[in-house]
Amino acid sequence: MSSGTAYPLSGPIESLGLSASFTRDAEIYEENNPAEYLYKVVDGTVRTYKALTDGRRQIGAFYMTGDFFGLEDEVRAFSAEAVTDANLVAIKRSTVMALAAEENDVARQLWVLTSRELERTRNHIQLMVESAEQRLAAFLIEMADRLDRGDDIELPMGRRDVADYLGLTVETVSRTFTHLEKMALIALPTSRRIVLRNRPALEQLAAVARLGCQ
Amino acid sequence: MSSGTAYPLSGPIESLGLSASFTRDAEIYEENNPAEYLYKVVDGTVRTYKALTDGRRQIGAFYMTGDFFGLEDEVRAFSAEAVTDANLVAIKRSTVMALAAEENDVARQLWVLTSRELERTRNHIQLMVESAEQRLAAFLIEMADRLDRGDDIELPMGRRDVADYLGLTVETVSRTFTHLEKMALIALPTSRRIVLRNRPALEQLAAVARLGCQ
DNA sequence: CGACACTTTGACGCACTTCAAAGGGGGTGG
DNA sequence: CCACCCCCTTTGAAGTGCGTCAAAGTGTCG
Image (cartoon, rainbow over all chains, first blue to last red; front, side, top):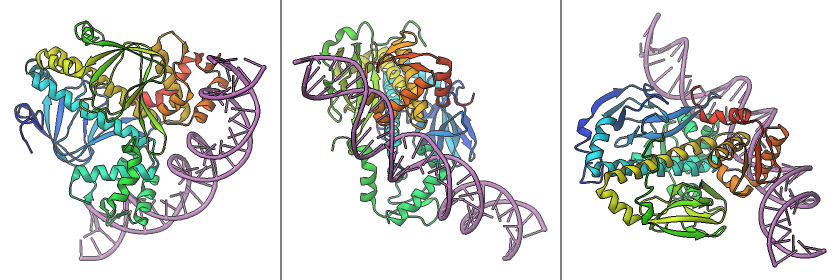
């Protein structure tokens, strides 16, 4: 949905981009490579991640329809891959930077995007100090909000992606799903379809991280 | 990347600020309050943190001489306190924003500061999925680099602060210090003075998080 | 010198990991 | 269209690193 200034880089800049399609698990860019493009998700889901030396993988974020990603300057902080088949708009960094140098509205909007990313990352840290149950509850609520299909959602990613995002093992994630189901907080018609059956209780679980002082 | 413009907001803007002094543990600002000022550390150390509902505390970052902090827009994401006695320069947000609206160089520099904060936060997440030993090793190396007194450093903060930054308990941090000492990776003349006796080994410990694909 | 806060050490419990194997579910070939 | 296979998910059992609770050691400042 494009309104006035609510969605920065909609309109003028977005039209400077090329569309690009990626199939499931396709690489979009790789960590440490030069950052040539900035992306907007038209359709589908993308993950950014770092490969750890011990073989594990830490997912930095998931990006869905309308989200921007890949706005690091110079060098990629993460690798990026398509979680599902995905359509993106790729915008040349040099183009954006040139525009930002003239139109300070554009510069401000880049800043807003980065600030949002920072806030998201800060919330992610808060998650990492909670119990598996709390992490998963928070994750499901965030996903429900972002996918906004109400309380009945279809996760675009599998258990491994969830685990690598939350800093847990697949087994723990799976067990925790089962546990939340047994507590009647969610229902699991299929492994990826999640029904939030008791959102207030889930929110209270997740809230430990969210609300600092009351 | 350090070139001519490496230290944004030095000079012109900084001179628009007021100096402010805080004694150890004094509150600088509080989470969820409106963000009126942006700060630069002249001297001393500052911590930002969130109080969790269960009584724990998650420290977001430590800021030392030369660092900027508190550049959230509108509302504070964290509380901020002085770790040691500290001298700051406080710059009115409205002043900076007005300037940024005209001088797009200022806007760009705000963006750079936010990007750095984002990068630091991303590294922080990587830390949280490592073992206590790896977290502490990475922390000590970061501190040694930032304090740059070589391999013999004086931590400005106590064990509790370290614990709350790394997402561990004081006891675990203390035990891990002792353990690193027994492995001859560090020496502990006093609890806050740390000598890195084997930096390569410490770096290798910490590296699991840092270097993704080789 | 004594009081208090911080740090260290010890013993024990538990949440999550690890290792192992048994379900599903979807897609392909026969 | 069914059957088989592969991969993802779930479940089980055992191990362990960190948290918790408790107390002793250490440094600092009145």
